[in-house]
Image 1 (tube, helix red, strand yellow):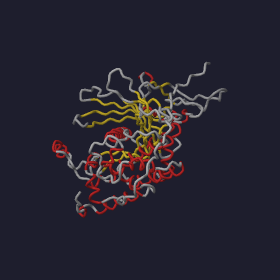
Image 2 (image 1 turned 90 degrees about the vertical axis):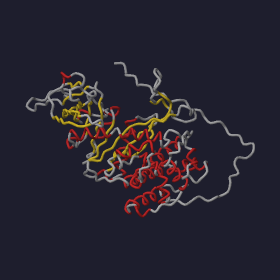
Image 3 (image 1 turned 135 degrees about the vertical axis):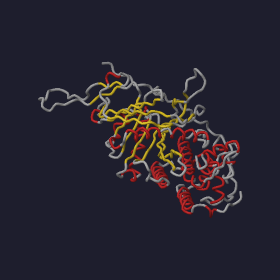
Image 4 (image 1 turned 30 degrees about the vertical axis):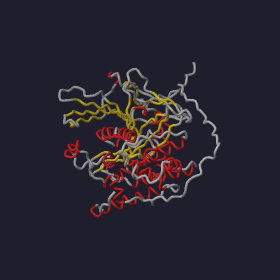
Amino acid sequence: MCMINPNHYNTEEREKWISFRNSLSSLFPNRKGAIMNIIDSLSSNIEGANTAVAISENDLFNYNYNSVYKGINNSFSSNPEIRKQQIKETQELIISTLSLEEQLPFNLFALDITNMDRSHSPTLIDREFVHKPSSIFGQKPITLGHKYSILTFLKRDEITKHNWSIPFSTERVSSCSTESETAKKQINTLFNNCPEFNQDKLSVVTADSYYSNQYFLGDLTNYNNLVTITRSRCSRVFYTLPKIDNNQPKRRGHPQWYGNKFDLKDESTWHEVDEQFSTTITNHKDEIIELEIKCWHNLVMKGNKEQKMQQKPFNLLRITLKDKQGNLKFKPMWLIVMGKRKNDLSLFDCYQAYLRRFDIEHLFRFAKNKLLLNSYYSTNVERENNWVELVFLSYVNLWASRNLAQQVTPDWQKYHLKKMPDKITPSIVQRDYKRIICTFGTAVPLPKVRGYSSGRKKGTKLSPRLRYPTVKKMASKKKAS
């Protein structure tokens, strides 16, 4: 590769990128060169490598293929305390690449689960049945594997006007835990490790309907500057707060917790709207859409002994989109807005925040198709966790390199360049990443030959690996009354 004069680049952006690279390499005290080469190879994977070991053929990987496995194994420590400290330093590094002074009056996060297919790994412990979409009619959309909970920071690049979903926290959901418990642990780590989010500025976490339950929403109301926006199924039943007359004498027995029923599928149970907003928007097809948002305040859901949801009211939003003729474009969407500062958000802010949640789906697709997230097959759970962390760090590396990237577009896609000449996406940065490394260099020295290993002695016999059964979660049976 020929060296390009970097003087024409913005000095501030160049210094930021070099500082980020130095900080990134300092996270790994062992096998720093191999680990950084793995991140660089994933960040420039445009040759079509389809397995983890295939990235050793990348021009930016200066070691042999054995170093791929050694780098993955030594990237994060197996000691829980040391690993926890490494993750904390990694999150601090990610925050340093973010500008928290954004146009939005709040920090926006997205939360979701991605599944890892491990159907052909009988020696991998803690496998369970997970969802896997299938295009074959009649086939069950399931497979064997692991689930990972991902918390991302939703960021909009003000220069290119492109939305990024930057992975902030990754955690494997074990078979003895649930998605809600893992997600609450991640949010707790976010506020404990990052004092930036404990300031007066509001933080908003968006999630799909799977998280609209008492086990997830109940504990999150303890944070003063956190608002959670989740989608609700259209078959849910909520309740109004009971009307308490202080003039009436107190009665014996259990106090009333719930008022009138609010059935989402029965319009006759809806009371008068507390707040309403309507406007016209233009979609990506240049169609004029009428947006209407109705809001009901202080509704509650059923709880239990641990989660007293009757003490945690929320706002319920009903969002409808109609065309010029007044026909519904989509089925009405219901949103639950819960938190101590839920009224600080306008109805339109809640709607826009939840729309941005879909950016995390683009992250999952890009990570699996371009960053080989689901292409590392190991019999060790810790190494699989290390690989997931390295894959998402390579995405952060692309985010940090976006201001140095240039449009590298094939001839058959020139119409994209004419339509959006300033658009810089993760795919565009990945195409141009080799040139960036060629221009500014890497943060680690080249490897040196240390000799050859003697290998296994003749006659060595290895014991077969243990086969682990598949974990099957059963629904808990209700006790007979």
